[in-house]
Length: 280
Length: 280
Image (cartoon, rainbow over all chains, first blue to last red; front, side, top):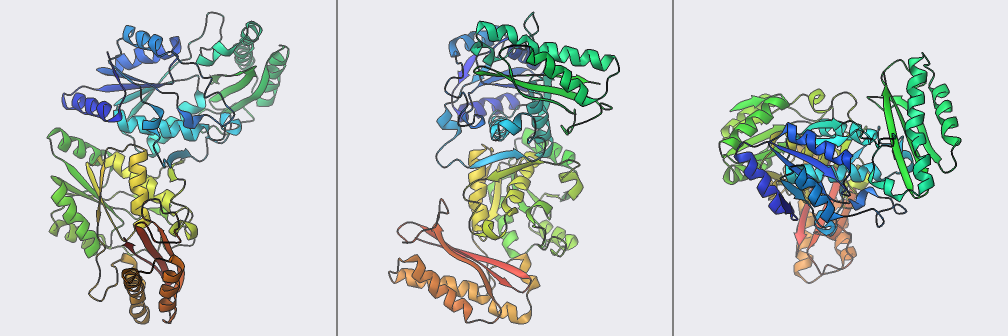
């Protein structure tokens, strides 16, 4: 395994691999890797000859009052985990090489990025789409793998890849959970003991939604109210949103008669955690 | 020469050429080709093994009240001109294949796109940057050639290519002028006889600016006022803007002590015409 810190070197290696007929899968991450990331790498490994994992805490996707500085980092540990997964290259650029003097070009999505997380994090997806565009152009992968925990992000990246004609196949990986049901996230480490306990309400509320749906409930407001009640029985959570949206367009739905993404974001102290499931 | 109308076919041919070690130069155009475009193709031909010219009247760069429908088109003539220049492929997509159902991802530039033409055409450069990103991703060129007449566009495209790390080298071609000095533009054909005569004021005003500069004048307001007076002596022109901006950042300058782009846009009846020069 080799760690690449410059854009030029990374592009050169990708082009060389392509010349030799090798396919390349990219796994974009912000590091502090957990089982969720590793599952992406395993899918990447099955989908292409060579796996590149990027590790970059992308400043443009953090709002001014968000946790850019506090975001957990442990490159040595990440490196060992990538090595163990058979990753060939880590792309680990310096922020100043990604966003130079006078940086001003961005990729935006004008519809599906506005609701859900986009409502409380207005610049977040602009940062995500921009950095992934950059990574696509630097690494020139055949395949890129993203996690389903970030449901809105995944759909926006698919939309962007289609709309801007990036020659990249997007694959997704199911949410990986701790044994008790909490979706894995680098931000889980912000949780206090009490918050960690309470954070189970995320998966519990989604399980409740699944159960209601299985029993024939199709009214979005009813399902959301039940989820909300369940979460509000805990001490620490503050709900940012619980929404039922069309799985494809992310438009809010009132009656669940199409595949529906149930998505929620809940704040526990310093940690804003996401979870979701598709009801269909 | 071959005309390609689908994205898939175009990408396939580009990839095949790349596998065979051939370099590719892209010349993006909206068709209705003139000597200016042909000069781009000649530069393209000198810069790569294979030239692709795209011909696409891009709807997203036209405002609601602009000339999308009226924009001149003559594909048969364009095809013959490309053939004569030794172009290998024309990429000639249908608008619906470029902007499908639910299209919503765009490329924006947040600073340099706001002034000059961006002030009176607020969505124009978003459309230009988006379509060029798409063309880059479809054709995967090594080189792309753009004209210096569209000075702001050229600088924005360079900025975008750098910022988003497109693996494309941007070349520019000097303005091509009619013998009397009018910069060539597909929109010149909108001009009435009187307007065509008056349109000489564009290059005349720039020549005046050059002369003032050569004589030591460094005050932007003085130069702009002289250009404005010259233009207003004609009957038909309506000045949209005359500006002196930093050649690199496009920030307005009051004193010309760095390379300065003198740029203007003037309306003649239905035709909004551009011209520019760099004073240094």
